[in-house]
Image (cartoon, rainbow, N blue to C red; front, side, top):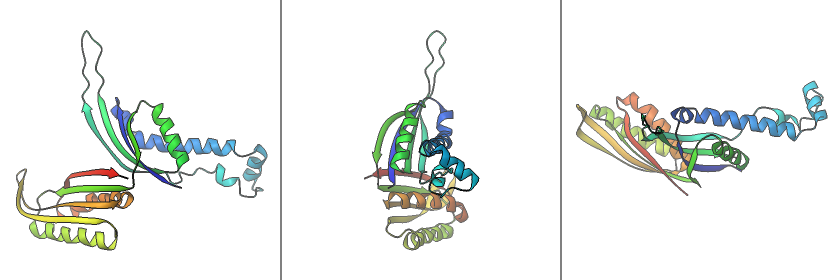
Length: 220
């Protein structure tokens, strides 16, 4: 069984936020190794190391990241810190939205990690749907139209089941640039939407543009 959970976190350390995904992976991997050792008899461990085991214990002992995956992580500054001469300094505050796919056991370990790592959990809930809104900056009108066609084809052929509402705009001015832009909304299964988001942002440069505006909301 795999769960998909949304977390809204707050922290007073930008370094903690930047290393969150890596540290979660390391923590969960370490916990799995400890569980494997605790669940396996010393005699079985010895047999596995010597190649005489039956294999049932081996799966518990091997390092395995399993189904744990950070599908989405976005951070922003809620408040800047302040240094004061005669009073206590005010620490900065950083917000983070994160969507995790993991087993129930890993979710529990993740929440234990967050409790002891200086993160405040503002919100935590299961999610199954996502809505992505996006817009591109102005580019050559022909390239913009070609990109719109590519987006439609990707939804039809590679991300079937997602709903897409996309439109193109001509002669748009933005930061001394003019040309065609694309705006759209994609809705559906949370995993597929987030996979499409990554492809969308990475492919835009091939069409002479960037996705400069995008937001994601999550629901059950």
